[in-house]
Length: 210
View 1 (cartoon, rainbow, N blue to C red):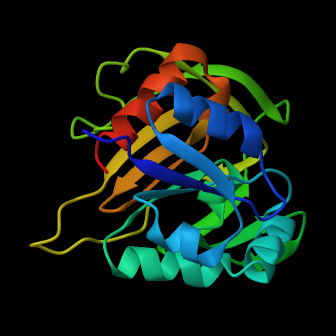
View 2 (cartoon, helix red, strand yellow):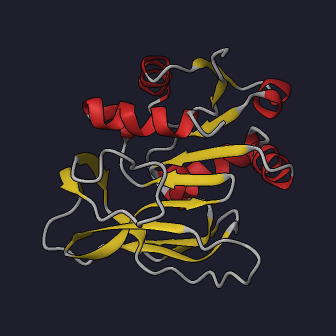
């Protein structure tokens, strides 16, 4: 079977080069690109993101990322968001009094963690959903987080015949979503590309769905 083509979307935000390396290690034919056609045509699209919600959202829009993500999802084509690339998929983000509109793929807000020390920086175990594909075989592993904000509630009501999303939670101060698997759209709050062999296995599991 040929290697699946994965485009890591380059819109000047995110740990893009390490994401490409991790995807290659996971068995993908990965390429860093800001090209619309390449991002649309790839078997999978990875949307990384670091920094402030508002800055990532603005950069994504400036590079046509909104339309690329929307078109891929409308066609059932896989998209994986990482860190702030996950956060911007929600309706809005609230950071230090600034409320920024997100992509609205999922309802709800990204808000500051209620924890004594921020940012949350380090390794955490997670509690995967029983239906998770991403965490298959790595349910008890640790993953690397660097963030101060997260989605702390899940508000999407899914009606049959659509399957329930697989929600993976963890806790730092309070519970928050570590990952979501919702049809063609998946996302992780942690950095799989910085999570060693467990992160590569998670990417391998994702590539295997393409």
